[in-house]
Amino acid sequence: QVQEYYGFLPLTAYLAVNYMDRFLSLHRLPQEDGWAMQLLAVTCLSLAAKMEETLVPSLLDLQIESTRYIFEPRTILRMELLVLTALNWRLRSVTPFTFIDFFACKVDPRGRHMRYLIARATQIILAAIHDIEFLDHCPSSMAAAAVLCAAGETPSLTLLNPRLAVNWCIGLAEEGVSSCYQLMQQLVGGKRAKTTAAAAVNLCSDEVLSCDSSSCTTPPPPKRRKRSPPPVIT
Image 1: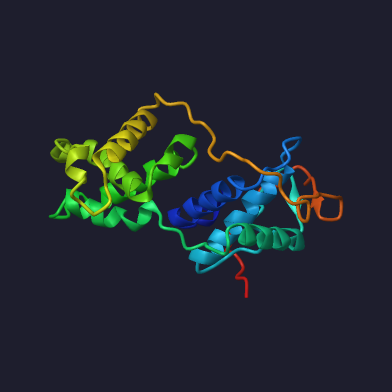
Image 2 (image 1 turned 60 degrees about the vertical axis):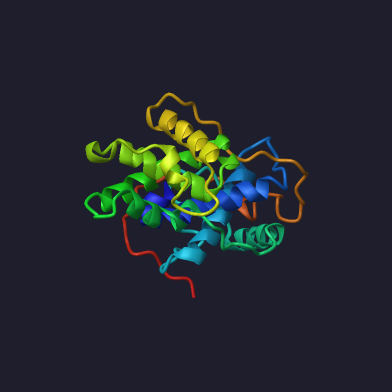
Protein backbone atom coordinates (compact mmCIF):
# COMPACT_ATOMS: atom_id res chain seq x y z
CA GLN A 1 0.00 0.00 0.00
CA VAL A 2 2.78 2.45 0.94
CA GLN A 3 4.79 1.40 -2.11
CA GLU A 4 1.89 2.32 -4.39
CA TYR A 5 1.09 5.52 -2.47
CA TYR A 6 4.58 6.97 -2.85
CA GLY A 7 5.48 5.27 -6.12
CA PHE A 8 8.39 3.35 -4.63
CA LEU A 9 10.37 0.97 -6.81
CA PRO A 10 9.28 -2.69 -6.79
CA LEU A 11 12.75 -3.47 -5.46
CA THR A 12 12.03 -1.34 -2.38
CA ALA A 13 8.91 -3.36 -1.56
CA TYR A 14 10.77 -6.63 -2.13
CA LEU A 15 13.67 -5.60 0.12
CA ALA A 16 11.29 -4.53 2.90
CA VAL A 17 9.69 -7.98 2.91
CA ASN A 18 13.13 -9.58 2.66
CA TYR A 19 14.33 -7.73 5.76
CA MET A 20 11.16 -8.73 7.63
CA ASP A 21 11.54 -12.39 6.72
CA ARG A 22 15.19 -12.47 7.74
CA PHE A 23 14.48 -10.70 11.03
CA LEU A 24 11.55 -12.97 11.87
CA SER A 25 13.66 -16.03 11.15
CA LEU A 26 15.80 -14.96 14.11
CA HIS A 27 13.34 -13.27 16.47
CA ARG A 28 9.74 -13.83 17.51
CA LEU A 29 7.41 -10.89 17.92
CA PRO A 30 4.63 -10.71 20.52
CA GLN A 31 1.46 -12.17 19.04
CA GLU A 32 -1.06 -10.59 21.43
CA ASP A 33 -1.61 -7.51 19.27
CA GLY A 34 -0.40 -6.13 15.99
CA TRP A 35 1.67 -3.14 17.09
CA ALA A 36 5.00 -5.01 17.08
CA MET A 37 4.49 -6.38 13.57
CA GLN A 38 3.39 -2.97 12.32
CA LEU A 39 6.47 -1.37 13.88
CA LEU A 40 8.68 -3.95 12.19
CA ALA A 41 6.94 -3.38 8.84
CA VAL A 42 7.42 0.40 9.01
CA THR A 43 11.03 -0.08 10.06
CA CYS A 44 11.88 -2.48 7.24
CA LEU A 45 10.17 -0.25 4.68
CA SER A 46 12.13 2.73 5.99
CA LEU A 47 15.42 0.85 5.66
CA ALA A 48 14.55 -0.38 2.16
CA ALA A 49 13.54 3.13 1.06
CA LYS A 50 16.80 4.55 2.34
CA MET A 51 18.65 1.92 0.33
CA GLU A 52 16.84 2.38 -2.99
CA GLU A 53 14.81 5.60 -3.19
CA THR A 54 16.03 9.06 -4.13
CA LEU A 55 13.31 10.79 -2.13
CA VAL A 56 12.45 9.22 1.21
CA PRO A 57 9.36 10.35 3.15
CA SER A 58 9.70 11.22 6.81
CA LEU A 59 9.14 8.45 9.32
CA LEU A 60 5.75 9.90 10.20
CA ASP A 61 4.69 10.16 6.56
CA LEU A 62 5.63 6.53 5.97
CA GLN A 63 2.77 5.62 8.30
CA ILE A 64 -0.01 6.44 5.88
CA GLU A 65 -3.70 6.59 6.67
CA SER A 66 -5.66 3.54 7.80
CA THR A 67 -2.83 2.30 10.02
CA ARG A 68 -3.81 1.06 13.45
CA TYR A 69 -0.87 2.60 15.31
CA ILE A 70 1.34 5.65 14.83
CA PHE A 71 4.91 5.40 16.11
CA GLU A 72 7.22 8.24 17.04
CA PRO A 73 10.32 8.62 14.83
CA ARG A 74 12.62 7.85 17.77
CA THR A 75 10.87 4.50 18.28
CA ILE A 76 11.30 3.58 14.62
CA LEU A 77 14.96 4.62 14.69
CA ARG A 78 15.59 2.39 17.71
CA MET A 79 13.87 -0.47 15.91
CA GLU A 80 16.00 0.21 12.83
CA LEU A 81 19.12 -0.29 14.91
CA LEU A 82 17.75 -3.56 16.29
CA VAL A 83 16.94 -4.82 12.78
CA LEU A 84 20.33 -3.74 11.43
CA THR A 85 22.09 -5.55 14.25
CA ALA A 86 20.02 -8.70 13.70
CA LEU A 87 20.80 -8.65 9.97
CA ASN A 88 24.48 -7.96 10.66
CA TRP A 89 24.06 -4.75 8.62
CA ARG A 90 23.66 -6.79 5.43
CA LEU A 91 21.04 -4.84 3.50
CA ARG A 92 22.36 -5.21 -0.05
CA SER A 93 20.54 -8.43 -0.87
CA VAL A 94 20.52 -10.24 -4.21
CA THR A 95 16.93 -10.19 -5.47
CA PRO A 96 15.02 -11.53 -8.49
CA PHE A 97 15.13 -8.03 -9.94
CA THR A 98 18.87 -8.49 -10.42
CA PHE A 99 18.10 -11.10 -13.10
CA ILE A 100 14.80 -10.07 -14.68
CA ASP A 101 16.13 -7.85 -17.48
CA PHE A 102 18.77 -10.40 -18.47
CA PHE A 103 16.33 -13.31 -18.49
CA ALA A 104 13.75 -11.30 -20.44
CA CYS A 105 16.43 -10.66 -23.05
CA LYS A 106 17.11 -14.39 -23.23
CA VAL A 107 13.43 -15.07 -23.87
CA ASP A 108 13.01 -12.24 -26.36
CA PRO A 109 16.37 -11.41 -28.01
CA ARG A 110 14.73 -9.04 -30.49
CA GLY A 111 13.16 -7.02 -27.71
CA ARG A 112 9.64 -7.01 -29.10
CA HIS A 113 8.03 -7.97 -25.79
CA MET A 114 10.78 -6.91 -23.36
CA ARG A 115 8.82 -4.19 -21.60
CA TYR A 116 5.81 -6.42 -21.08
CA LEU A 117 7.92 -9.35 -19.86
CA ILE A 118 9.74 -7.21 -17.30
CA ALA A 119 6.58 -5.48 -16.07
CA ARG A 120 4.57 -8.69 -15.83
CA ALA A 121 7.38 -10.65 -14.17
CA THR A 122 7.71 -7.83 -11.64
CA GLN A 123 3.99 -8.08 -10.81
CA ILE A 124 4.25 -11.83 -10.33
CA ILE A 125 7.27 -11.54 -8.04
CA LEU A 126 5.60 -8.91 -5.88
CA ALA A 127 2.58 -11.21 -5.54
CA ALA A 128 4.82 -14.15 -4.67
CA ILE A 129 6.73 -12.53 -1.82
CA HIS A 130 3.73 -12.94 0.50
CA ASP A 131 3.78 -16.73 0.16
CA ILE A 132 6.04 -18.70 2.49
CA GLU A 133 6.62 -21.44 -0.10
CA PHE A 134 8.73 -19.09 -2.21
CA LEU A 135 11.26 -18.69 0.60
CA ASP A 136 12.71 -22.04 -0.48
CA HIS A 137 13.65 -20.68 -3.90
CA CYS A 138 16.72 -18.61 -4.74
CA PRO A 139 16.30 -15.19 -6.41
CA SER A 140 17.53 -16.41 -9.81
CA SER A 141 14.99 -19.25 -9.85
CA MET A 142 12.19 -16.86 -8.92
CA ALA A 143 13.22 -14.47 -11.68
CA ALA A 144 13.41 -17.26 -14.26
CA ALA A 145 10.03 -18.66 -13.23
CA ALA A 146 8.40 -15.23 -13.29
CA VAL A 147 9.75 -14.46 -16.77
CA LEU A 148 8.55 -17.87 -17.98
CA CYS A 149 5.07 -17.17 -16.58
CA ALA A 150 5.04 -13.78 -18.29
CA ALA A 151 6.22 -15.36 -21.54
CA GLY A 152 3.46 -17.95 -21.27
CA GLU A 153 0.93 -15.13 -21.51
CA THR A 154 2.48 -13.92 -24.78
CA PRO A 155 1.23 -15.92 -27.83
CA SER A 156 4.52 -15.82 -29.74
CA LEU A 157 6.52 -17.02 -26.72
CA THR A 158 4.33 -19.81 -25.33
CA LEU A 159 6.64 -22.67 -26.36
CA LEU A 160 9.10 -21.91 -23.56
CA ASN A 161 9.52 -24.32 -20.64
CA PRO A 162 11.67 -24.49 -17.49
CA ARG A 163 14.22 -26.77 -19.16
CA LEU A 164 15.32 -23.94 -21.42
CA ALA A 165 15.87 -21.60 -18.47
CA VAL A 166 18.62 -23.79 -17.00
CA ASN A 167 21.04 -22.48 -19.63
CA TRP A 168 20.33 -18.83 -18.94
CA CYS A 169 22.92 -18.53 -16.18
CA ILE A 170 25.16 -20.61 -13.92
CA GLY A 171 23.40 -21.89 -10.80
CA LEU A 172 19.94 -22.45 -12.23
CA ALA A 173 18.63 -25.98 -11.71
CA GLU A 174 15.75 -27.45 -13.66
CA GLU A 175 14.10 -28.84 -10.53
CA GLY A 176 14.24 -25.50 -8.73
CA VAL A 177 12.95 -23.49 -11.67
CA SER A 178 10.20 -26.02 -12.44
CA SER A 179 9.00 -26.10 -8.83
CA CYS A 180 8.93 -22.32 -8.58
CA TYR A 181 7.28 -22.05 -11.99
CA GLN A 182 4.46 -24.39 -10.93
CA LEU A 183 3.86 -22.38 -7.75
CA MET A 184 3.73 -19.14 -9.72
CA GLN A 185 1.32 -20.60 -12.25
CA GLN A 186 -1.00 -21.56 -9.39
CA LEU A 187 -0.62 -18.08 -7.91
CA VAL A 188 -1.33 -16.33 -11.21
CA GLY A 189 -4.28 -18.62 -11.91
CA GLY A 190 -5.78 -17.92 -8.49
CA LYS A 191 -5.59 -21.59 -7.51
CA ARG A 192 -3.17 -21.06 -4.67
CA ALA A 193 -4.05 -19.76 -1.22
CA LYS A 194 -1.33 -17.48 0.07
CA THR A 195 0.44 -18.48 3.27
CA THR A 196 2.00 -15.53 5.03
CA ALA A 197 5.76 -15.67 4.82
CA ALA A 198 8.26 -15.59 7.65
CA ALA A 199 8.42 -18.18 10.38
CA ALA A 200 9.88 -17.23 13.74
CA VAL A 201 12.13 -19.03 16.16
CA ASN A 202 13.62 -17.10 19.06
CA LEU A 203 12.30 -14.57 21.55
CA CYS A 204 12.93 -10.97 20.58
CA SER A 205 14.77 -8.47 22.74
CA ASP A 206 12.52 -6.15 24.77
CA GLU A 207 14.88 -3.24 24.16
CA VAL A 208 12.62 -1.76 21.50
CA LEU A 209 9.60 -4.04 21.42
CA SER A 210 7.75 -2.36 24.25
CA CYS A 211 5.00 0.04 23.30
CA ASP A 212 3.73 2.73 25.64
CA SER A 213 1.57 5.80 25.26
CA SER A 214 4.58 8.05 24.69
CA SER A 215 5.89 6.22 21.61
CA CYS A 216 2.91 4.37 20.15
CA THR A 217 -0.55 5.80 19.72
CA THR A 218 -3.73 4.74 18.03
CA PRO A 219 -4.54 7.32 15.35
CA PRO A 220 -7.91 9.06 15.07
CA PRO A 221 -10.25 8.17 12.20
CA PRO A 222 -8.21 8.75 9.04
CA LYS A 223 -8.71 11.82 6.91
CA ARG A 224 -8.05 11.76 3.20
CA ARG A 225 -4.50 12.91 2.63
CA LYS A 226 -3.55 15.06 -0.33
CA ARG A 227 -0.83 13.70 -2.53
CA SER A 228 2.26 15.86 -2.43
CA PRO A 229 5.98 15.29 -3.05
CA PRO A 230 7.39 13.47 -0.02
CA PRO A 231 9.89 15.40 2.12
CA VAL A 232 13.50 14.35 1.86
CA ILE A 233 15.39 13.03 4.86
CA THR A 234 18.78 14.71 5.18
